[in-house]
Image (cartoon, rainbow, N blue to C red; front, side, top):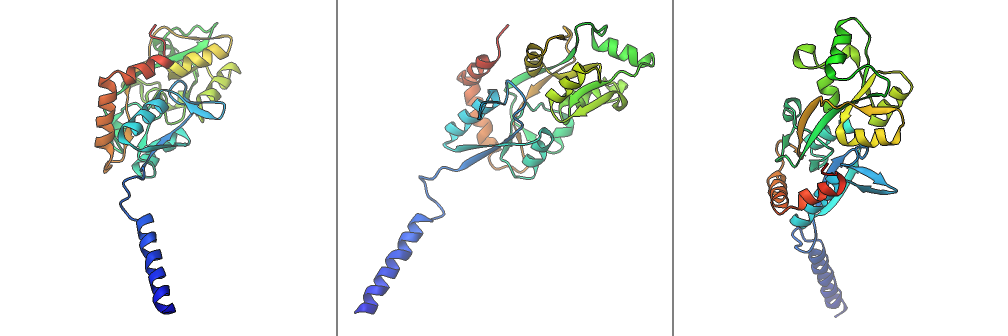
Length: 259
């Protein structure tokens, strides 16, 4: 009798474990992992211990629409694309602009926002445009431009003159935009090329710097996925719906003044 009772109890435990650890639990939310670099206001940055910004809120809205939990992994900017391409993250959102080089490694969603690369200079600088930088370089001056490593600002400006850049010898890559600004303030470089929105934040925080009126490059921001991503279509569909119903526009307007 004791053996029969023990066998019944054992079977009950087995069935209970199977019910708890079944491979298809409809009540369990899957996780959507987003790779980013939270040093890029207003797209992703910290307020105290909380990460906030345009990309953060759009990613959360996408996760909510898909019924998933959002997990954000903060990493170096130049690690975002490789993290997505290798499948360590489901998607990358870090103010990522679509470029031919990046498209060789990952695929992109529809664009959800436009970015502008601008030039920051000291107030007393005689540089008034990208043409001035090029003219000085062609005249033999050792003009040095600062950019954040891995950004399109660095990619574009370090390209050859024939392709619209200034040449690698005239561009310095820094770990973060703030490091490039620090170098500019200490007269180690002549200007900084960076996205317009963080540029405004840097100029607001540091006296003596201005953003030139002329734009350097305009670009579109999108979400990056691995080439073989199984979730890319679902995420892009959710993004399209959030754009169509005005959610994305409201999020962007929260962080970027329409003026």
